[in-house]
Image 1 (cartoon, rainbow, N blue to C red):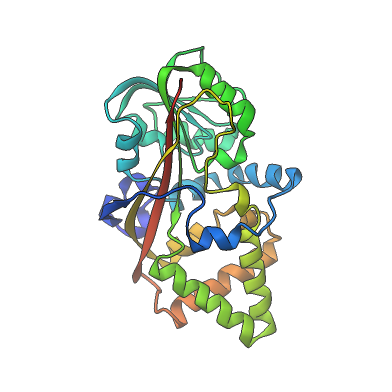
Image 2 (image 1 turned 30 degrees about the horizontal axis):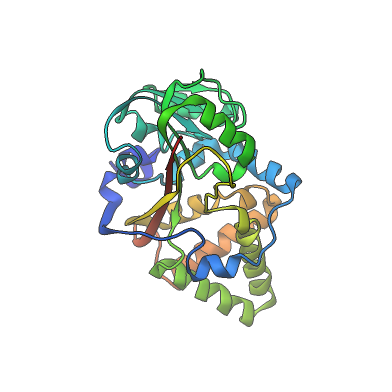
Length: 307
């Protein structure tokens, strides 16, 4: 299938290349996390706006956002099971993996537009309206509850209470964040370009500033799972899965356009960022047309068992 004909990541097995290793780490690790810990969390108003932005680009989100690797589901659920819940399921990146592991998969998504794409692309799951704080399934009915790059949009205390309610004793709760590895070669090169741009021209400084500020805002609440003291869950385990994906310029620009802080930008500013990014990809990195670059990806997973 030609790259221009692809409509989602379910048919992208040819671009998924595991690196053949898993690195066990602890929460809050690494230079990138340390640098971004200084950034203030999003205000309630900003968090709400961002969490509701993805429905505006639901089809693009499905097309350009790679989901977690299959290995994460095997780590969450070493054995096939009966019923699992995918919280904040979006367009179904994790859901489509869970249907291969569980007889009944309930995908809970509050946004009607995202949920419509999910129902169309993953017919093997039950797509239901709901939130982490109000999960529409009976008490003790699930053996697993999972959140894929969505946990930071939820209120953790009431959501954990709901997860405990719907999980059977011994059931697993897991969260995973998936995205380009900040320490991968491509991301390091991109950061260096932004730093160079900010030094060379006012326009470059403005662009680098908006990209950096937008991406860093709220970092203190993202990319990690923490359990408050006294919650009825066991100790957290964490695992990192790494792999490479070959992306062309259209896919890189498309991925950029699915980030909440970019979605919410004024149209002229967003168009300017896309044009500058495309120019840099072509002129500086030689990525244009069907030329691809290997982008290192990382899925950071957490799991814990219900007491």
